[in-house]
Amino acid sequence: MTEPDVTDNHNVTPATGLASEGYAVRVYPISEAEEIRLIDLWRVVWAGKWRIAVASVIGAVLAVALSFLITPEYRSEAVLSPVGSSGGGGPLASLAGQLGGLGSLVGLNFGVDDRTAESIAVLRSRSLTQRFIEKNALLPILFHEDWDEASKSWRVDDPEDVPNLWKAYERFDRKVRSVTQDAETGLVTLSIDWIDPLQARDWANGLVAEVNADMRSRAIEQSKKNIEFLRGHLQNTNEVELRTAAFGLMEAEMKNAMLSAVRTEYAFEVIDPAITPEKPSWPNRILLAALGFFAGFATGLLLVFLRRS
Image (cartoon, rainbow, N blue to C red; front, side, top):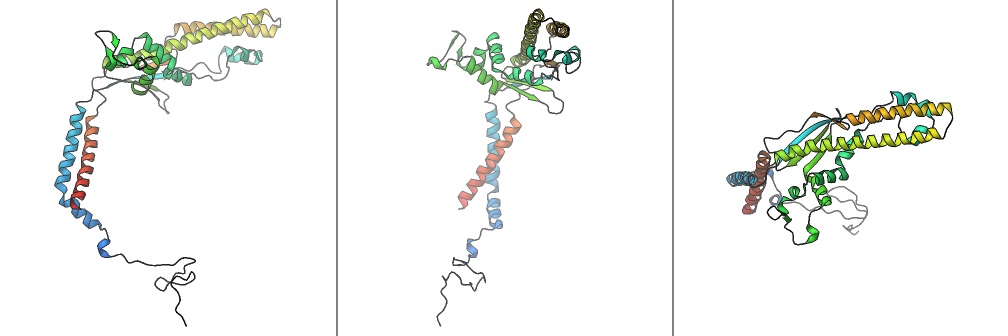
């Protein structure tokens, strides 16, 4: 009687008692010398504790020293409350049943019409930002590292590298302006981060005034177009109900145009205007010191293990 082959696919391995379906099971013992024990790692770390401590302190000191070489930035914030347009109440809603399809042709909305999303979109928009930059001549300020104040020219070799409004919008949108809205209160916070605290304050308040003026102008222009349309409609219809509804709409649009003209805070009501910040928001030396400490700790730990090995 022959002994069973250890590579037999249907054998039961005596050491483990497990059947192997198609594979041979082999157990390789691990020697005690090859085991990595936590106590050994702790002994290595404890033996090099002073080196790790020195590396951590050096990392924190270097990070704080580096923070003094970074140009400080200041943050100025304005807290705004979006102004929603009148909703389903008022004269427009009372005329909704009489108009039929006339209101939709004019472009009027008789439901709840909240301008919040539109106002925030305009505040972030490229067109408004570029107009604000051009109106206030901000190109030399945003790209001050490339601007020669003495000769009033750009210090660039390639004409394609000359800053333009598109590049200014990208820098302003990515690095200067940020817009956030509180999900609970609905309040909008406009933040401006810049190296000059006075300019940061002026830009924040200026942007709010710009978006209010822009949306107020749009509303007045739209009301004028609606009134012209309704006048033309009156000339082409003799139905009493439609003429009555059209007259009511014209009256409502005239009131809307007048209210828009006198309302300076048309899109956003300023709850807390931007002020001149007294302390820089960046660099945060405490945060940099903590990051430097942990970076030094990791470096010291690595050096200790490399030296031990």
